[in-house]
Image (tube, rainbow, N blue to C red):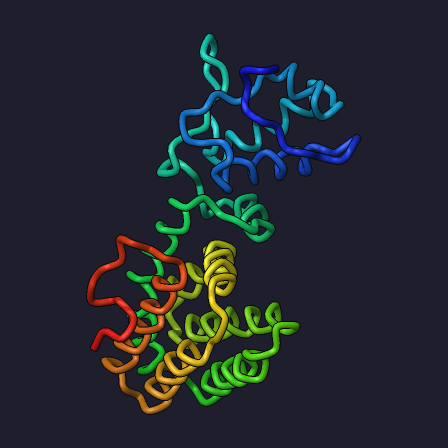
Length: 252
């Protein structure tokens, strides 16, 4: 056991889904790196006090989601992050309960947001209905009401997520709305981590307000640029060193 990877904790008699989630979190958080050899089934059975059938089914779930590869003669290996099936429903569940996502996963999700959300905001500025605007504004007002109370940080994050959800819906494009739903857990993990790194949210609120106003005023170009400035704030909070220079906080 001394030469194998450190094993996570799971309650006694954990079922297959719980074992799969515990092991998935170990990979999704980066505790087990790409290329690492996963402990043998027998070692996992002993560690979790679980039957071999239960452990095998949990590993099969991870394999179906692209997290691990099981090869005869080589054992079980953590796959490269490019092979992970982020849109799999199981991944959505696992990511929702993840406190510290893998650093590369953070970068990949941010890259998706950077590519998608400015354009989605453009669509919202063209297509938003009065009801859509009310939803975006309600979420923004919730962000403002909870921004400066440490006891309401969780509520503030929920309103932040609702703000972006409402913009995806306001695009009135079926594909983008579905992408927003499917990748919501990944985006949630990103927002949660960025909020853990800031003390005051005044600048972030102002950037979100500009997005709201641009959509309300039917200004697609302004909405796109305002969304890029929101993401610049996110990049700064996440300390993403590879972010494009044009998206540094305060960029014109």
